[in-house]
Amino acid sequence: MKKIFKWIYKPEGNCPVQSEGYFLGYYFYFRARHELATIEFYNKKEDFCREEPIYYFILKETSQHRAGWLSKRESMYLIFKGCLKLLYKLFESKLK
Image 1 (spheres, rainbow, N blue to C red):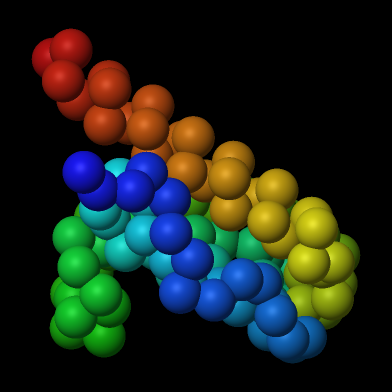
Image 2 (image 1 turned 180 degrees about the vertical axis):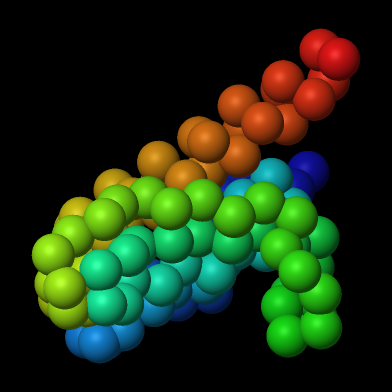
């Protein structure tokens, strides 16, 4: 059985704050830099540099250069928020 959520690495760094992992088998890349915190989802990690994301969400907008200084706790919250957005999109697409 696949894990629902798996970290490659938890949020770390400043300018940018970054994190990677898997949610429901989809690879995600989180980055908080300048005034945006975003998350991108790909079918697999190898697609990250070669393909457009299958889903992309802006999770937070801040004043200029503040996103790169988000706390690890807030970054983790935003990542989970992005995963819930993906879950909703996947569920929504199944209903169509």
